[in-house]
Amino acid sequence: MKILVCITHVPDTTSRIAFTEDDTQFDKTGVQFIIGPYDDYALARAVELKEQLGGTITALNVGEAETEPTIRKALAIGADDAIRVNAIPTDSFFVANEIATIAKEGQYDLILMGRESIDFNSGVVHSMVGEILGIPSISPVMTLDIEDATAKMTREIEGGKESIQAELPLVLGCQEPIAEWKIPNMRGIMTARTKPLEVKEPSANTTKTEFKNYELPPEKGAVKMIDADNVSELVDLLKNEAKVI
Amino acid sequence: MSILVFIEITEGTIKKSSLEAISYGAQLGDVTAIAFGEISVEELAKAGLSGASKVLHVSDEKYHLGNVQAYSSAISEAMESIGADTLVLSKSSLGDPISARVAIKQGASLASNVIELPDTSDGFTVKTSIYTGKAFAITKLTEDKKVISIKKNAIGIKEDGNAATVESFTPSSTDTDFKAKITSQNKTTGEILLPEADLVVSGGRGLKGPENWGMIEELATTLGAATGCSKPVSDMDWRPHHEHVGQTGIKVAPSLYIAVGISGAIQHLAGVNSSKYIVVVNKDPEAPFFKAADYGIVGDAFEVIPKLTEAIKAIS
Ligand SMILES: Cc1cc2nc3c(=O)[nH]c(=O)nc-3n(C[C@H](O)[C@H](O)[C@H](O)COP(=O)(O)OP(=O)(O)OC[C@H]3O[C@@H](n4cnc5c(N)ncnc54)[C@H](O)[C@@H]3O)c2cc1C
Image 1 (cartoon, rainbow over the protein chains, first blue to last red):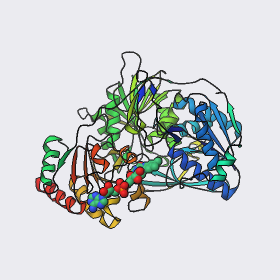
Image 2: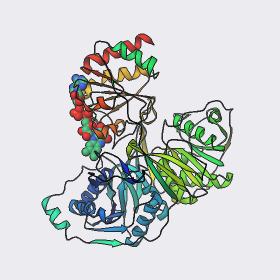
Image 3: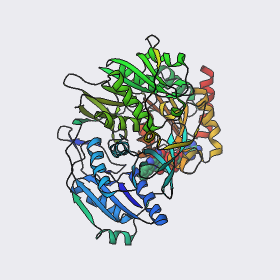
């Protein structure tokens, strides 16, 4: 089985979000970049499926050279090789288009990625790729099992879940509890250095949006503390000050 | 602008978040809504109160279970048939994949997590929530066709319109549309759905075990709130996964979020920072959640929560 795992290169979840150059650039000062947490679940499940069924895992990132340490981490966790499409990931459509091009070339059985990136949170790239390729896309996937060419999945829906069955090839957006995050071991880190990482130029230059600038939300006001013996004061504040109950 | 709004149905009524999408669309142009599944004509006509002039209803049984590809094809077809240039929907487990697929089918610009009406002074510019609520992006949609996926509870619902006319719509589906088969669906019924709830009571590891959720549920029932939890709580199966709030779970945007026995790790806060008001009950005065709260009580949840429930009952 050939699995393609698409990973984002995103600020660690504890990062302070700030911007520079008139709020047009993300401020990378002191920020550590990671594999997106949802993509990390996808990668972990891919490694398990490979152990079970055999096959290969290719990690794919659309990004500039700075993302290579993140790609190497995916190789250390268990991808066999990697592709970096050398471009700034300008919008969802651009990224989906590049992923679809690589997917077509490589004829993958399974294309896995996170349900959404944690920078732009759109949650649409998997389904765009599915639509471009004319195959089903399912997200957010909580469990995935494969038997012959059939995938059985559970998908989270509002207030519950549903079971879905489909033939490969498929594109899936993953989330917990599909697998446990894997930490690379020493051997993985050593072999990752020599695993192939191919750099490709983007196939097209197609965006459908034009980014203008960032904004930060207003600062939160100070917290009002209420004595634990006086909960009726809280109720009064919620009713008459906040007017939410 | 001619706008199609995809509306979702829950237990025979239009979801609140979909009424919000209609209200948004109605401020941009003429709105036709499209709905799938089991719902009465009277209920569908209520889409008019929020501003839809017409509702297309796909009642064919094979569309009952939210099949993404089939819905996307039908919606794209409906856009063509009414000449719509824009699709508006609410961001959800169906909204996300449908917005993506329809955007590709229509060659449209897509904006997800939109929180305000567009600025049309120079083209069509939207504000979206990014970095899990920690920032916003201002983005221009450059194509004539657009797909706008709005963040729940960001826009508000308009309710001053007249009933809409309801027409049945029969899409020309293909087998490819049904390649992914939904074999079963398991949803709670009669509960307030967490992602669109206006009030949320959420519990963390501080509650010590699933057997202690009675007081959380009682407070929630008293308020008419949905229940949520932190990630370790759903990881340990104390609560179902669809209640998990945070960076890797549900992002809520209620007017009131009450956090009980949750420390306030940055990844949890990422899921609640769009709440209008936050109340934190924690026995540790140093718990980081207090910095993100509007109102705080330092105390033992097992004492404070029952008293709070009584005090709320007393005024209602
Ligand atoms: C990549 C990543 C993603 C993550 N995503 C999420 C996410 O989406 N959502 C999420 O929630 N977490 C997430 N986490 C985990 C997060 O970092 C925290 O570990 C988690 O939120 C802690 O849950 P908690 O507050 O319930 O538990 P704890 O941190 O153990 O806090 C328990 C709190 O309860 C208080 N307490 C104890 N007893 C009482 C009592 N009797 N009365 C009142 N208070 C009491 C304690 O003072 C403490 O503050 C993520 C972590 C990572 C690394």
